[in-house]
Image 1 (cartoon, rainbow, N blue to C red):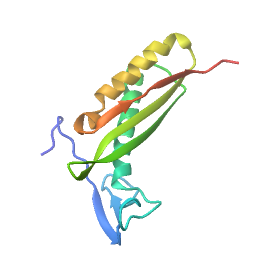
Image 2: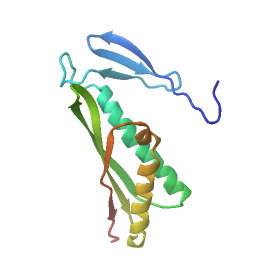
Image 3: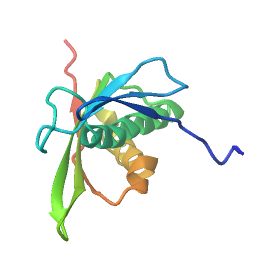
Image 4: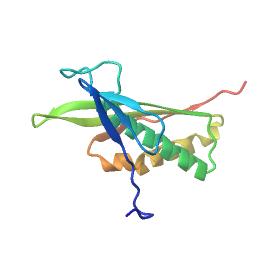
Length: 150
C-alpha cells in the first residue's frame, strides 16, 4: 500500500538481444534502450548503460532539487547546466561506482545574488535524495557565472 510518505516508481526491462534491453515504465511514454557499457566484454557502444543511468540519477536529482529550492526561494537564474561523471573502480576485487563528480554551472544576471546562488547550489546538493541514498562519494564543484549586461 502506498502512503503519502512512500512513493513507488516502476521500471520494466525487456531483453532484446545480446547485451541490449528495452527499458520502460507504465507511468512514462518513452522507452530507452540499455546495454552493457563498451568497457566490458560484450558491451555495446552508443547505448545508455546502467552506469550512465546511475550518474544521470544523481545529476538529474541535483537539478530538480535546485529548481525546487530556487522556486521556493523566488530565486531567478538564467540557466543551469550540470556536467557530471562517474568513477568506477575496483574495491575488494569488485567493481563499484566509487564517485560521482557534479559540476553545476549556474548563470545569474546580478552579482549581488552570487553568494545566495552558491548557498542554494550547496543546499540542493545536501537535500538530493538520490545522493543521500547511495554509498558513492559525491564530489561537488559548483560554479556561478554572472552574465554581463550589455
